[in-house]
Image (cartoon, chains in turn blue, brown):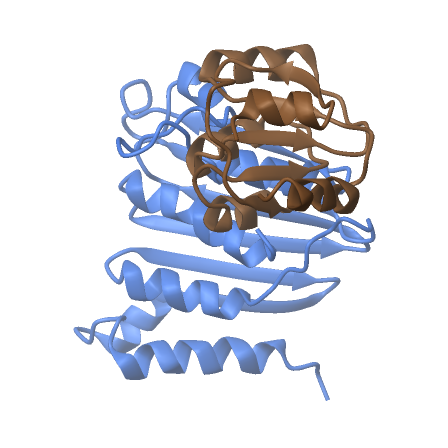
Amino acid sequence: MKELSLNVLDITKNSVKAGATLIDISLVEVGSLLTLTITDNGCGMKPEVVETVMNPFYTTRTTRKVGMGVPLLMLAAEQTGGGVTIESRHKEEHPENHGTVVTATFHTDHIDFTPIGDLVSTMETLIMGSPEIDFTFTHDMNGHRVELDTRQLREVLGEVPLDSYEIIQWIGDFLREQYQPAE
Amino acid sequence: MTVSELKDTLSLTPVTLPEGDREAEGVYIGDLLSWVMGRAQADNVWLTIMSNLNIVAVATLADVSCIILCEGVTLEESVRNTAEAKGVNILATEAPAYETAKRLTELGL
């Protein structure tokens, strides 16, 4: 991936496929350490499956033999001296409290760190593609915080679907405004 | 030209050669795997300096005829074994990608 925001899109789509109803995407930058965490309440994976998603020759898709989402995230993290961990609770063993947490760390001052890219577009794309799912997004940049919670939007919007053009545009503007450096 | 003929003509080091009779056509050069995955064409010779297991997966997805590891890059045994098992041809050279590409051009690829 040329930009980290594309990895975020790729990994979050796994949460969508896992049937999640709430997905949290969090980026925290402290100095030159960036921690990306994607948490979902989807069906989760059994321990033996968690091992195989790190292997590029595994996928849930039937159209091809290999799945590259997690391996490419691992490559992006490891080439900066960071890494990826996955914790998952499968719904069969944890019927009340299942889901997956993918955590990736990056050293942003490493020469092979790929740019973060356009996270606003990533969020717009995700919400547009799955308007029935709730997303919480936070990006903490050494104390400057950008956040979005679609549950709060729904309270205000009532029955208006999140994927309507005006809402997506509003979400994009709302996030971009927060990214503007404080005056 | 087949991958085996390519290896002999350019004196490349065979790393894995499970399908040496495959025809090679065209060349793609790149190290950003997600980029290569979407752009390399089937039967291309792929020149790279990357060496992790993901290159075997990308070679399979893009269906390239072989990988040429440039600049003396070597593979871990486990990566080599997977490539062998998945039928991915891998050759190696001390030359950089540009020099290797020039020699491939001279061969008409």
